[in-house]
Amino acid sequence: KMSECMRFRPCIDLHEGVVKQIVGSSLKDGEKPTENFSAILPANEFAEMFKRDGLKGGHVIALGAGNDEAMMSAIKAYPGGLQVGGGVNPSNAMQLLDAGASHVIVTSYVFVDGKLDMARLEEMTDLVGKDRLVVDLSCRKKDDKYWVVADRWQTFTNLEVNVETLRNLAQFCDEFLVHGVDVEGKMCGIEDELIQMLGEHSPIPVTYAGGATSVADLDRVKALGQGKVDLTIGSALDIYGGDVPYDAVVAWQRKEEEFEKQSKMGAFGFGGSFGRTYS
Image (cartoon, rainbow, N blue to C red; front, side, top):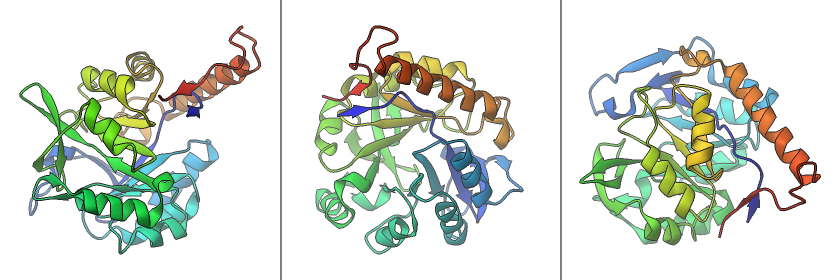
């Protein structure tokens, strides 16, 4: 499967109907999470900005209840441009896609009591279609291995993120979304080892999120992931109160697209062979 160049993927995280950046691992039932940022602008304005800047394939994640209205407003502001996750199940998935989401992202619904429920995964795939489903493999490190975590990242599942898991689950979805939960929202650096594994073994497109602190991280992920792993930068972006200029990230994306266009035209002697190949 050929895909275009590596991409920066934007995100809109919703908490209590407000666009926020939260330290993901601090989301616990009944406790107030650690917030890095809370926006004044509504969700749809961020969606409009991403649409204006041609940033496709970003994700809107609802963290807990009370986000339906904000989520719908974002989807409608950028039809076909955003994936949506957080509480997605068979009862609401079609409604989200019909409203304009490009994909639905499934997490906790396909894990029951810390185990992957293949029947539920197949149910989701049959309902929405493989090409409109993203499986969230957000994970934490334990005993030198990466394990998928569910239920707002509080529960370790029995599913290890490895070659076998990536190959197996790729049959049921269009893409993977992987948050490095240990570093997510902490702006303390990315999970090199995880990104390397994803680039080497994922048979389908994958987006990594967690710990990015600079525009240089885009180049770093491009190298580590062999150009096959896309990157989300959240808390570190200036639009979310951080230091990384959003405009510089957009400029990086334009440069990648230009390079790819030139390559396709054979300007760099690549002929038409450039692009991302997933085996």
